Image 1 (spheres, one colour):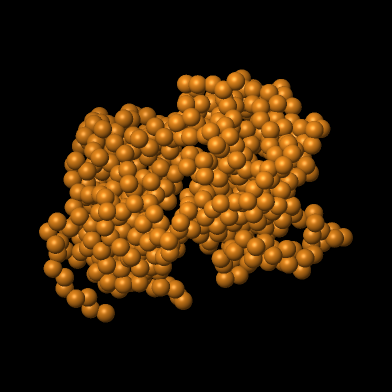
Image 2 (spheres, rainbow, N blue to C red):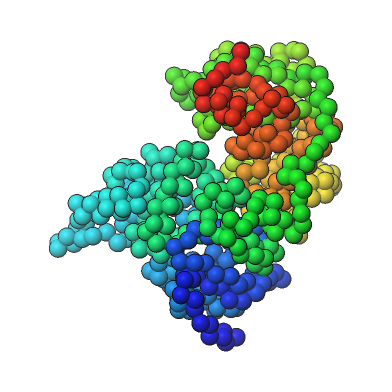
Length: 519
């Protein structure tokens, strides 16, 4: 197909004209047209499967010229990334920072930035003085607070991300694509990233910002494009949009409430944690819990809030018998003290855990949906040293239907699913064990707004049936929107418990930072 010649608009660094990308049986992008202004921070949002990743793969050269229809104008000229497409994109000044960082852990920041293009001395050896001097210039220019000679594996995630950005900028990037850049960052690191993006903007770098955290669009972007079902629905200045409008464009309907109203009536206390202390089993000198107490009621959603590193995940993995070694304190179920030393012990008591990292901890990605759902429940399908495959299939089909898991077949590998459907598989495998207590660690992390809503509805339904839920979340709005009560963690201890009627973001942050303490 011969593309029509387009006249570029001077202020635009990127223009997409009628871009279509097809896969067997699927149109991933359908006649997409929009433009991005030079030097702006441009948000691209949409549910999983909307076409964001496909579009960015075209732009960064993963899908080369000729594998899609339509025209892309870049800096006034048609963009044709062909044989060396990914390398060519970088040479053209288009760089992408992925959610999973690509640095070499055992190398320094400077070595990573100049990997494969190290400055050389006349004798052919690396000019280390120049390499680190050039690294320092880049870091200083863009106000990136890391040392050129720091070993990457010893950096926090936030500083690793700075190094990844510096690596892109060393290639003289004109367009920087950031894919879910804040998914693993602390609040302080998010603030720092926002400062860095403003600095890049001052230097004329155009940033394309992709995230499921919709509030961030209103904090940092100049304009937003919404994709839905492979189509560009709208491109508008951020100031002309609000959260409700953005969500309605994304899902194709008005969502009157982000957090569905449940009909929960918490009952009696069934689970108690009293003065729990625990240490890191790999480092007996390291305390991970320092006096945690709370109780949990039947049919209740108990939120656990706190800053990154406050001990939230350590608390629930200790309760589940996976990580911490308890040195003091008691855990009671139905008023009787219980001892949990392993995940098997926890399951025996009707406790299940949906972990923080579904890909590494919750799923065997190369295995099918069917096998993942049945994995922790094999005992119920075992008969005379064999698996009753029909019973296994019936149970998995029922869970897939109950949770509306979207897949062509239960034999599909889990790595082929969207983030929201992967999370549903993790939840399904634990619901199959009929838990009394369901622990959910950041259950909506990295999934789109529609899938979030479905998981919220599921949580309400489970609580209405009497399941007690402990929910950790990094998003305060989610904690406030879904919890009956909120326990706030600070430095390994429970620093207070708020009823939902008295809880506010300000009160939670005051407790989370240790400024105040509830007695």
